Image (cartoon, rainbow, N blue to C red; front, side):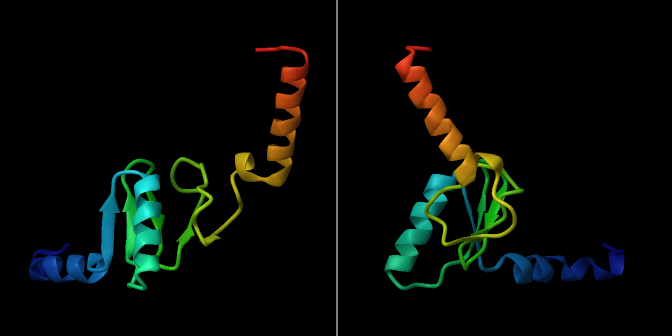
Length: 106
């Protein structure tokens, strides 16, 4: 920031982050979202420290940012699902587990 604009730093920071909350992990963030939703309160944008993801107030999360593990409790997801969240992957995983249990493979 240019020295002559330094006086604006705090007001810019406030303008950008005034409706945001930082929470440690994705499970706590989802519980917090659902709690506010059940109380019919405004839901802020939530930043998750654990996987550096962002959940917008509408419940949209970009799966390309963060761990790639997609929680089932979000209303919407922006972008392509991670491979391990697709129906095809889950079907293959289920078949693999059945195969392993049938032949006692660990």
